[in-house]
Structure formats: structure tokens, C-alpha cells
Amino acid sequence: MKKCLTASVAALALTAGLAHADGHLLIAPGEGGLNWDSLDAFAAAHDLSGQELDITGPWTGADAELMENVVAYFEMATGATVNYSGSESFEQDIVISTQADSPPNIAVFPQPGLAADLASQGELSPLADGTGDWIRDNYAAGQSWVDLGTYADPDGNDQLYGFFYKVDLKSLVWYSPEAFDEAGYDVPTSMEELMALTDQIVADGETPWCIGLGSGAATGWPATDWVEDMLLRTQAPEVYDAWVANEISFDDERIVAAIEAFGHFARNDAYVNGGASSVATTDFRDSPAGLFSFPPECYMHRQASFIPTFFPEDADSDFFYFPSYAEGDLGNPVLGAGTLWAITDASEAADAWMEFLQTPFAHEIWMAQSGFLTPYGAVNLDVFPSDAQRAMNEILLGATTFRFDGSDLMPGEIGAGAFWTGMVDYTSGADAADVATAIQERWDSIQ
Image 1 (cartoon, rainbow, N blue to C red):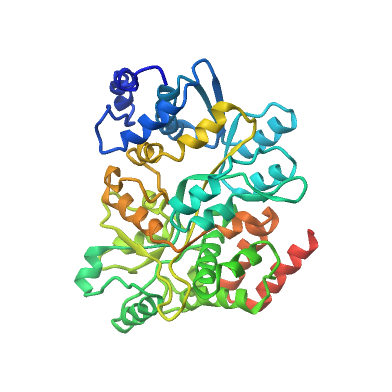
Image 2: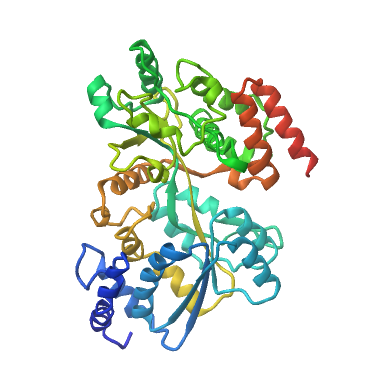
């Protein structure tokens, strides 16, 4: 690359005052503990002066500004101009643009299902040779990420189309350290210990769990996460994959057992704040409030990394990994979600962007802002602005298996319909096998 990278970074840093005024973070050259050498090496290999790159994704508002802060460094390193457009109706917009033969160069998919559909229609370009090997070598549970980004092409041949960047974590249990300390409870490190702690809290005359499934028209979805997490802790990941693909039916005894494993916690009056009958009617956003009352109404709440948004201001909260069984042989599976990046209109700049995402710097610059987790083992975790984000990322890096939210991978009528309502029926007293059979019959009816 001909131009001086250091000078370009310095020029960019002149805009940092405006960025900070908006609450976003741009880091001056050489500062912040970022891997600047990886950006230097990338810049030296790419001169895209005069080229444009169009990226479309789901982020709008403040989230789009975080994305723009990442984009700025790519533009600086390559000389390219990047046009990012975010849309709350991304899923509809990307289908329309591909059908009209006017797609962006790169699309950012919140769910793999739509990317798989477009790949089968010939609307995505496979990633460069060697990308799969890079993911296996550099991402924790690397094969999981390759599998999640691999889809059949129009000829039915599997190809790697998707690169995951920016991940969300779901396998978490939230608690109040102050409440745990006062009661003398230790954080459990296995499912057996978690169950023992649950019983100990009951023996102490207290209530262990806050669980709520209410979410308006989406009521029931928190239970699907529970079931998915329990399936990953009781069966091999191949069983999970086959279930999500409807190759193993909902009424298979292994799936029914995972539903009942959730019921072990949710259908026991002594275990749940308000009793089992309250689970289906308690709003998921209100449910964790009991952690922070005095005395506590409950001691634990299983929910994804976003839930602190609904905690009381200045709540004393922490989390631990929703543990696996010590007696099992399934490692440490993690359930989550994330954004998948795919090329929808191939170009030199699009290929370069995918290479950029393979630099530690590209991850660290978003890590240093907010709302970003990564399975990339080479990043500097010290750049996270909070201990909580760092600890979450350590859980992600410790995963032996990562699986995407199963309900999000199923047809909408099932994953965002029959599965949700079925879990409400189950927590309200219906038999697990009967609920599973009804969901499967619904799935069969839409084939």
C-alpha cells in the first residue's frame, strides 16, 4: 500500500472529538491496547483507492454508529469508500434487492436461515478458499462456526458462505453477589452443583429461580432457550442439529427429555418465584426483579447477555455460565446468536472486507466500544470496557461447542409459533410428550 497508514490513522483521530461527543469510541493510533500491527499488515496488502463497498445490515441508530466506527478504519487502511445502510426490515429488504438484481456487496444476516435460502438460490458467493481453515484454527469451537456458515449451493453442494462476526451469548445465569454472599452460596460449576444449590436454597426456606415467559405476542420464547440449552447438555450436538433440521422429530424421547429437564426447574412450585403457575404469565422483563429485592424473592435467573437492560438501576448483578453435567461427556456447550456476513455481490473490496474481519483489530475496535463478543482467540480481552463483557467473552472462548438459537433456525410457524405456544402449554401443566407431538404435527403439516 502506497499511502502512510500512521498518517491516515492520525487524520482519522482528528474526528475523535465528534465521535466522543456522540458517546462512541474511536481510538488514536497506537493506543488502547489494540493489535495495530494486524491493521498495518492488512493495509500494506490492500490498495482499494477509488473503489466503493456497499454493506447492508440490521443495525440502525446508535448501533449503526458503532458499525461506522469500524468501517472508518477499513476505509483508512484501504482507501475504499464504504456505504453502510441499516434497516429494521433487513430480512425483507435483502430479499427484494437480490430479486431485483441490485444487492449490496455484503449483507449482514441476524439469522443463518435466510442466508441459507439465498445461497440455494445462487444469490451468495462462496468465501475464499482457506476461510474455513482459518475459522477452525482461530475461533473457539471453530468447526461449529464453519458448520453454521455452510449451506447448499443451487446444485446441492455444500459451500462456506457465512463468516460470523459479533456474537451474542445466551447460556448465562444471573444472580446478586451480595445475596449469594449473605446466604453463603457458592457459584456452581456443574449442572449437578446447580441442582444441589437449587435444593439447598429451598431447604433454607427461600426460592431459587425467577422465570418468566411473558413477551406479548412472543410469549413463550424464553422457554425455548431453556430447552435448547438443556438439549445441548444432555445430547451430542449432532442431535441438536438434526432436531433443528426436523430430521429428529419433536416427539423423539431425547427432545421430550430436554423439555422435561426445563420442567424440572420451571414446574416445581418450590423452585420458582410465584410458583409454577406464574411462569407463563410473568413478563420476562419483570422476572429478574426478584433478584434485587430485600430479602431476595429469588436467587437465580437464566437469560441472555442483554437482560441487564431490564435490571433496576445500579443493581448488584453478576453471572455465571449455565453449566454442563460433570458426569456427561459433552464438554462446555454454549447457546447463542450472532451476525453472519456474506457476499451478495462479489468484488475486490468485498473480498478485502472479509479478510479485514480476520484481523484481531477488526474485532477489538468494536470490542472497545460496546455490545460485541467474539470467538476469536487472538484478540486482546483487555480492550473490553467492562469486566462483565470480558467475562462473557471468556465463556464464549471456553466453549467446546457453539450452537445458534434453534427456534430461530426453524420455520417461523414452528420456531416463532408452535414452539412458543407449546412451551406455554407445558409450563401450564400439559404433558411434555403431548406438547411435543402437537408441535411435530404442526411441522409436518407445513412440509
